[in-house]
Length: 409
Image: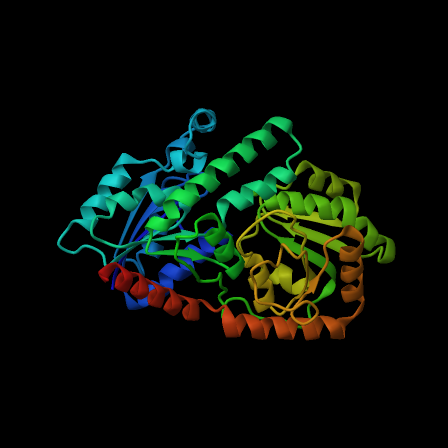
């Protein structure tokens, strides 16, 4: 099968949720099929020069060809400000305007009308839906890492700045209208959870929605026993609103309650761009550490007795939860943090949604090694059975074939 895979970001190095999913699915697809990759380049994530060429080589190990395209709002802060302002006066959502590229449009059209046109075109976010018209005779599928309109609706509820809250709510409404119109035109809409599929069908009842969940490399992430300390850990870049909001809430509302019961306990929040509130907690000596970005989080996670997911905003599924499950960690999460993952409260992890309950669950697990081991073993087993990337790569190939069959009828 020939696959044209178009993404909103270069999926390398795979150090974030969207990047991990893209990288691992491309790797699995490339083992069985011929894949061409077209990707927008984010210079803040992948600095120009040697790192860009390095990414081309790595992705070229399983892609027949790799091409990058400029994302115009990322050219400078002025371009980004102009893009945000433009979206304020346009009916199209910012994410759609941001991914406008004549060069990419012409490249997709050329590939899809060539003698070796793809059997299927994969567009990897709602912001790329505009390119369906360039696919010509090739059927197209649209992937949703989240239901973006719902994600923005949830974010608005926790946005304290009045103007920002208004802007985010307006973008959420525009995205919902855009999803309602455009999702029906694809042979399949790929969501990461059944919950997201149901939400999409509510927005666009004519759409075909199928689930390919997020996954985890169960050979890379493995349990390492005997290293645990009186330590809770979170991993995820604080440049993402959901992570920053969740960690700030945890540090302000939850962690003082934990420390009241266990004064020697420590909390480590690993991820780039820690917030001012997190930095202040580190400075106060509240048992909080914020080392920033770490390329390999596995040794730090191995030392933690409890992995926390204090998210209050988000959508889709969190790969950080699957990574922790594969490492056999005892997890305390909000219900939203574990949303979309096939786990049972009290069996594979522990759920808590208010500060006092969350702190209580963390304290209980920090005090109970046997309980931590039981939860971690069950989580690891579930990750291996249902969320390993080779399994999901084969399922995605099967989904493509169904989409091709629909186009032929």
